[in-house]
Length: 342
Image 1 (cartoon, helix red, strand yellow):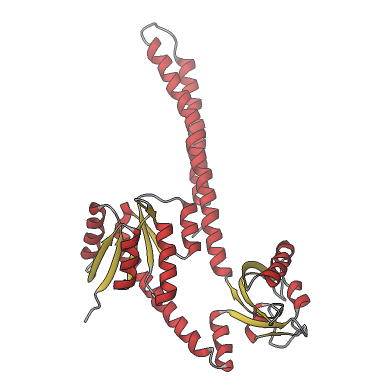
Image 2 (cartoon, rainbow, N blue to C red; image 1 turned 180 degrees about the vertical axis):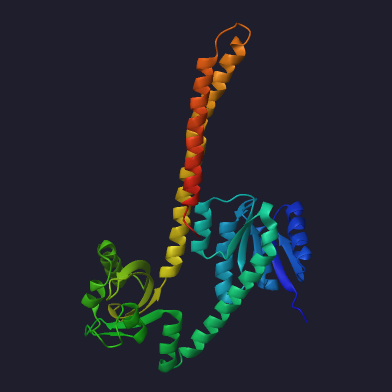
């Protein structure tokens, strides 16, 4: 029997809700929906119905999708919800889309392109299931050191710990591999670690680490490392600080996760956005200039057509302006073709 999806729709426009539901029905999806537009009702719905999918408008009265997503993440961690969060909005900038992806939103759909919505939901559910399976798998393998090595290899992360009293550091096999080494190939430690931190990130990272060890219970950060072979990787790092009875730090336990592919994907989006801005500037400025000249010259012809004035010179100027316009249009086309691939 096909599962009936529980869909929570955060929307204040009945017309938009109707469009969303009709598009899902047209795609043959089996679902039940609950519509809310207030924060209190939204929080209650998350807890009570535990939706399979959340569809959220960006702008609501005294509430928006950013706040809605933060509420969802808080409740998700407490109730172990695996529901995808999809933003549905009338308009969205590339910058906003990038920020949403960075924050963890599964996808976004423009309201004038709702035909994408069924496929978007299906893909998001598949990804959520994969992530749920991955978490379950990692929870199981952490019980065994042997299986932990397998988990690190599959998930591309590494663990480490440092005894601040003795100065002895230990790296897991996954940590060695992140830096391009075979397990046990080098002696782990603070100096070895910073040999592989990108020079442009090193000074800030040292200050952040010193502050965290002295004042915080945990550290979360992103930076670049250089592997044994010179490859640049982006890593997501987190460690916790173990303190003694006198509150002095005695041990650090942490994880490193290779996020190079995700980071490069976001960089491609940002590069494409920059190219699109450049194209938009050309359209709004350079195209307007020859068009304005053509329009002005046409006005001259119109005002003198009965006066017997020789218009050949004016027509030549119009021709030159049209050629200028053709050059600009070709430039726009060329820049569009050069736009970075997604």
